[in-house]
Image 1 (cartoon, one colour):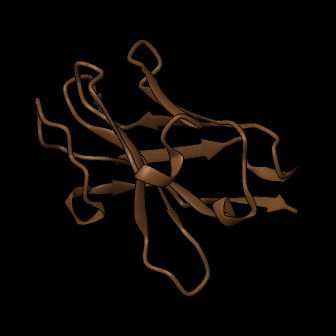
Image 2 (cartoon, one colour; image 1 turned 135 degrees about the vertical axis):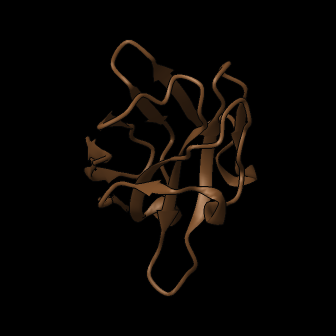
Amino acid sequence: QVHLAESGGGLVQAGGSLRLSCVASGRSFDFNPMAWLRQAPGKEREVVAAISWNRTTHYQDSVKGRFFISRDKSKNAVDLQMNSLRPEDTAVYYCAADSTVFKLLTRQSEYDYWGQGIQVTVSS
């Protein structure tokens, strides 16, 4: 059974940084896309950043230059470094992965596997 476990969330002041980590178990995702998504209260879940099997990346416009996604295939993991955080970044953040190979997926509906989510709160 596939399990994605997120860690690293919490409360931070505006302008601060957090690093989210996600470790997958149950199968390898070496050739598959992985991503971080978020859902704020009253809003739809959205892709924040995605990374392909060969480390091609995609970012939502609002986080470009502030957030950075990376993956460690030896750990079957994906991280999200979040800098210059803003109150509008407050949301539940989810790690996701998909069984499609050799692609970069940029829509939340395309992902098959999900973590339970972790809260990130940015205070003003």
